[in-house]
Length: 625
Ligand code: M6R
Image (cartoon, rainbow, N blue to C red; front, side):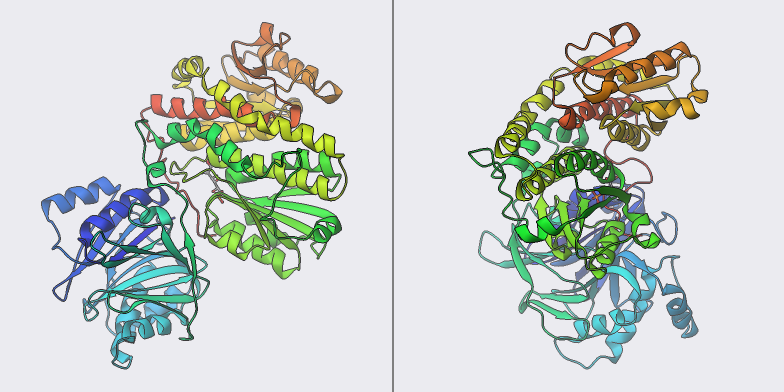
């Protein structure tokens, strides 16, 4: 949600900032802007629409070369996507340029206060107040080298809500000052080939992984000052010095490139076998035991757990729904799964023996972060499953299990999702192991099944050509249904979400057995219905029930698209289109059955001429509530 880039160093800031914006555009793409500080003057350019629009403006009217610059790509909250509302925002006296991610909740009284001094606002954004307040605070701050940072601290103490702010001031060449509260910001520290120091700011490390792997994590309510001569200084909002945590970025710059694919999403779908293998790597012991060294909860704490909540949003929530089946089955601990935006508001029953598993690819989703904080306030233990090293959610959790999916750039989550599901299996199995709920050979058997998943996913991917053809034939549809039972139900929900967000086709996922209780009324001649069929080996004839459900919808005219495992002949007479997946143990089946649904949604969107990687109205990381 809004991408932020800052640069101070010997390179041309225009190029570095623009390159950072290209890498961060997935965070928000309804407008973009850049400001550079050259010869004691600010120059800005901003434009509604995708970054390409800004690039055209810059080609016609280049900004001056500079060594200090900031850039922003926006996902609108206050004020629609327009040139005027695009960031950076410049103070009325022209001294300060500010970019912002988040929401300044008390912006209305602050705006009134600024207007009372005669300032005329140029935009409808909450951000603009920060520019005017910062300019005023700078004028009032004592002279000295920390004057801009002092002013930023004074402003931050007045702001309510969540924000990352980055500012540059005409009187402070080669300096950037930034602040964060509940919104992401990382610092990159690099060195050019000739040994000169350079500094970066970014909403995430994608902003600068082409330049450096050395990064600093910032905590809540901190201000960072970056000065080419004096380096990096971090304080809290009251000026007390803080020692930031340094870390090395393990993502590869090439992993954030399309690598010959038309869409990042296609590349990320193709990377899934490797991402799963990487997520398992080092966690499966030689004798089939699990070794989750980074789960910083003691065996006793894990034995004391009497209830689990899984809390997440969107696709990550669907991973949580799958986790419930596996964790309850393996551990007999009750598991509740909840969307993060609802969790804290209903006052859930939590205590020291509750384990809350928060799942987030980005590690910055505000709803999930707030749920995490609520759980910690109630003394529950929090375990994060996360893909982004150095992000807020793992930092604030008691324990973390990283998924090693690498950077996920497409807004629609694919490899992020499958690795979250795999991480959930690891957590469930680890709990069963620690609590003695499974014999060693039982754990080892599931571990063997997990090891087979990368090849199983690769074999699904190798057979996707017919799915592409099917997608083209579905491109004109305006609605689709997805059905599943048991672990196939969350897969159906995920298939429907993918189709909605990418192809803008109204899609709903249902528990297959629930269909006859109402939704079946919407089926008429030709309605496409995707059915995720469980293995014929699944318990209590779930398979047979789903085969009956396929017949029910077909009898009402549905065009059935059936995903079933190899060798399942029962479905053949009722499938208008049959997509085969390899035989996989029931609980692990979502890892293979999800893949054709990802490809289907991606290809339908592509056939409709849509932007697969950056669907309308969405942003990759939702950092507002
Ligand atoms: O970064 P997170 O995993 O916390 O993101 C959660 C959701 O916003 C995300 O999964 C969203 O639903 C995706 N666009 C789905 O493809």
